[in-house]
Figure 1: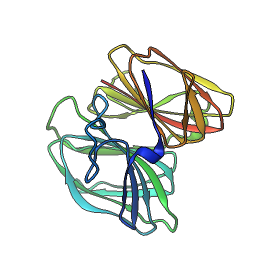
Figure 2: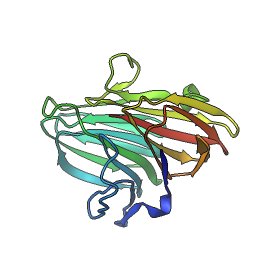
Figure 3: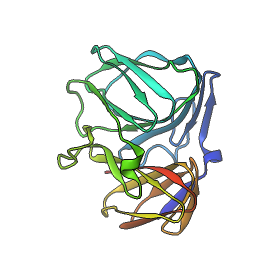
Figure 4: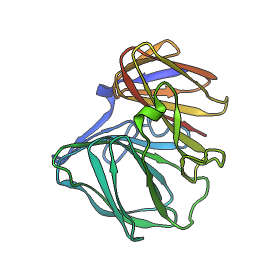
Length: 232
């Protein structure tokens, strides 16, 4: 089953400095039909104004993956970590038993991110943070794993979840396949462009919820940048 969730049907919140779209129930947006997709709990499409951002706040027991689409995000946390993650790159925070962090756009231009939360396989544990560049050229025409809870994904950022976060860039007319096991949940969002997923069209920033589809054939109708979560 493939369900397209058009961008204009997503939850919305405009705070001035932050313009957010919510694929799942979050903060003041509540839809009982869009609470989660397997262990994928949050997918926020955030636009952050220059020289603004999220001040220090706490999290626990969540794997938080930030995919930077445009601009850059600067992270700082109560563990002493600090780093700047640029467009196309990824940062991961395992909140574990608890951590405070801030996320600021210190750039002179708007920053756009996907913020993805995945429920961990176990609660607690030492919190941690990491970031890594993932050049778009390296994922041209194929999916590359960005973050993973599986040991065999050695090049990916580690997360404590039964999940993978992947990305691909496809030129118009190109296709990429992905195998989704029977008990898995897929959720795909084109950051840019437009694609067909097993013949079903999705436009930029639409959500595509996938169940019971073993082989996914994703074909780009336009030059496209894709992010996919494969979760229990």
